[in-house]
Image (cartoon, rainbow, N blue to C red; front, side, top):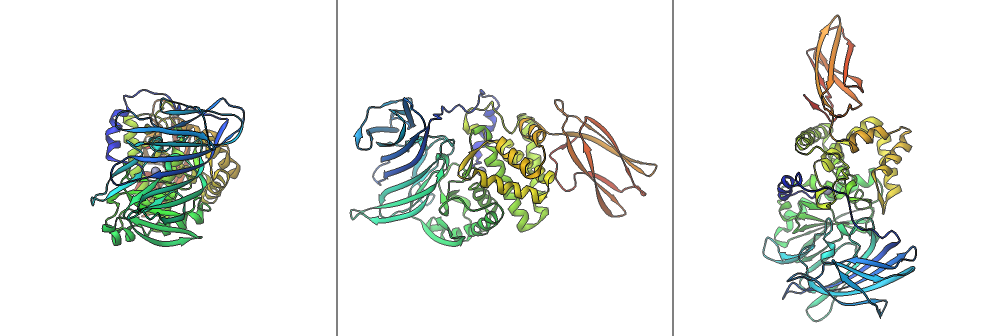
Length: 524
Ligand SMILES: [Zn+2]
């Protein structure tokens, strides 16, 4: 979900900030294949001791390779204890929060030994019940505060966590649990392994006293709840719906991409954070009243969209958030019916319009360079609305076929908007260039001023697109109610002004635009 009160405050600041696009410095010749993060946590202070094994595949001769890790400055940040390739110490530079090491071709495994107190990323705090807790909260680029890594979603890798922690704690982390052993000294080690590549933005651990329950299994994927012991029964009840959600998405999209699906009550700066296979939900998500079904559906949808088929650039984050928003609506439509879809989309349309008036920009906005600023009503609600319109344009069967092929093609991989368009074009046989151009890359939406009258057995609908910059092209459904019965006519709009004539024997009682909520527009 990733929306907080903080965002409302940030939204006020966004308008005045400088612009540029995703500027992460990429090394296209290096591909991180696997991480093993060994971490030691303790109760007497917030210092962590870490060792990271980073296996890198160099596609070509490169002079050096760098890992992100926030360097100690004052109280917070990390100090390097050792840096080696295999067991052989190597020279390195550590500046501007990057560890730079020499590289060559082939596959190399670096060992980074470090320690320090993380300021962010790993939140060491107490739960709302006063219990000590450690929670990873990386999105978008806070992994570098506690894990040496390529901290950008373009380079994903499989990973392992080996967490040493006081043995009174329960430890959950990205991946499948492969070991939990007491070390006999008051500590235990817990080892998790995720074979699918994961972006660092959605890598996590959770360490505190948890109550845990197996909620169910879907195609051998265990679905579990990890909640505070004080919230045991309410938490198990609230999170149980995750099983139904997972079933729905597996059936309609394709195989679940990760080793497990843990649902974790957590300290997170977000409402929910879709960490791969180990979702974090805000502490007060547990109420015992099943109030977070939509949030749970959103975060689970991310496992396919954002976590497995991952945006290659932060500026294309609608492929993550717009999809999670719309697939939540699809799930709700399946459970509660079409009226639920309409209600949600009407609310979202209002938000898109309000947001646009304050911040007229496109869904893919290449002027944004800070990933914290890519989350907006444009990337969530408008992105979702674009999928609703695409579904209407292609029809349900082609839409779902396209979604399945898109996931199949880009599972465990990275994508851009153009990749999604190409798949949907292939499946439908339609040219979607202008559709994507006007809804994703152009700001705004049709602002329609219109009226109707009845003359000579005809309904005459006159309309004008009032937005300044651009004439949108779209099918416009008109609902005509006569003698208590409503029929729908579809009009093709592609100019600024139109007059349509619809033959009708009787004068309608009512004529309305878009009765079934398939068009993003503002009625002026
Ligand atoms: Zn989300």
